[in-house]
Length: 492
Image (tube, helix red, strand yellow):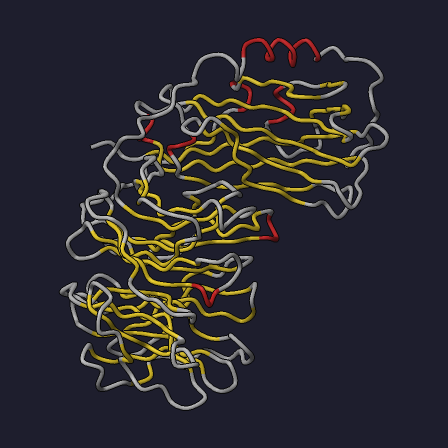
């Protein structure tokens, strides 16, 4: 890498940067897309910093539009499942903060047509409810008898009791009930703490093992959170090697053949098939690349890279289900790398700057320079970027992929690099990447999202690249590349 020299005053390209300040993100392109569209999915989520106070069962489209939610009360809701009638919803709620034993089952509706009903009343954990295929019963995991086992009750919470005998020293939990085959799949923990998947029919007879939990041994390792495909022939599940490392697998029910489909640099949770069986939906956390929070993501069933529907770090995923609506299958068109020289750029904060847009176009050691400025007892430099997307309609955006390379002349234990994307619907910036640099070498930050919540009616994408350092001397910040790749859809 070439040697860099810190400029002492604004260089000849500073006029370019500050001209962009006047004509960039603060100008047009600030209209959010419509948020009153019919929902396609319901998603349990809770605020990372205050889960007990701020949580909800949100109603959203599969492009992250909508603002509705199921009426709720204090305490995080989990594992919401929609009744076959498409209106009633069953879920668990943790009534007391950080107390899993306080989880009870509740019944509500997506349209507020009935008052919320509490289904279980005890001082032991009740969790993971699912409906029977005809909607007459609820199957769930309960610790009412001491160890976790599978229980059933009526759809109003009456006549609850054990569904399946659990071997001594074992525990059963996380059931799913196929609406097409009447099979039930669940996770069974053995006396060493390892989990494997088992099958049983809807009457509670004929239980057989489906998976062996893989090669990793130890407490809470193995196979978790199974969910049937809509046709009942496949099961998607999480294979966990440790608390913060897991992969996505599928198992063919007829043959018990297990296949790995996704191995993140982190862990996954709460997987579900899409109604059309073309995608997996799940929670994804990738601490190694700057995303600690479990965020809603999706992936083609054929594998590949995951795409975030929720880029925001502040919400933690606790459950997914789909409404009985037809969700169109979108076909991607040829991807386009956008020319960074066509963007509007704004220096959000910096003491000095030097460079031109051309220096942001490639990873070539020809870099755009910022010098940090003092802000709230921190040293901060930030660059706002606005891209006009070359599409006819905002909904033609299937995915955008964003990358930036950042380097600082100094770091400390409190140094952070961030990328935040503008959320027009909620009128804020959402942090997508938050990295703690471990050296003064280049750091790559990147993400991909399909969220239309972060695209304007004017087809504008806005994001910020930030270096946020501890108080001290001014620091030199170099940005070597800002890249946006657009994946449009094929128009009908």
